[in-house]
Image: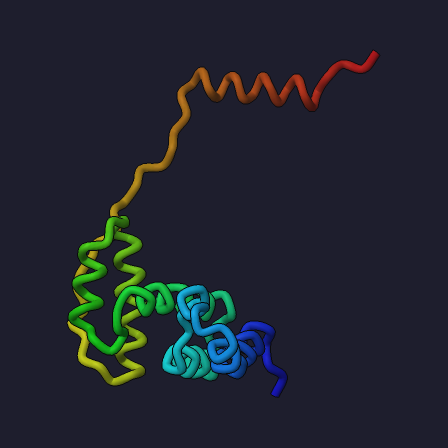
Length: 145
């Protein structure tokens, strides 16, 4: 089976992590959090057919959560997400990804409810539309001499 570049990087990272930490003990805070559980979870998702961009999203969210608290403590994670100063939509994404991780790990997680706020589309003023049209007309339809 041909490994993707993303999974290759994960394997190389975990393979060399202990060697790097032994050589540079003070570098632990510089190395991004990528625990064995996260790697195994990403491999599980890869086997289920998730795309690489989805795996990358899960990886970023779980590494962010792991950097700030223990992923095996759902109450801590819920409290951290609730106190985080981000939009409700971002909180919903964090909770959904963490809930998937908890289901895989067989941890009990009471998923909090966050409702994504609906935003109205940007509607330009009539003057702005006229300026845009006149600007494009000058650029693309200049008279040739």
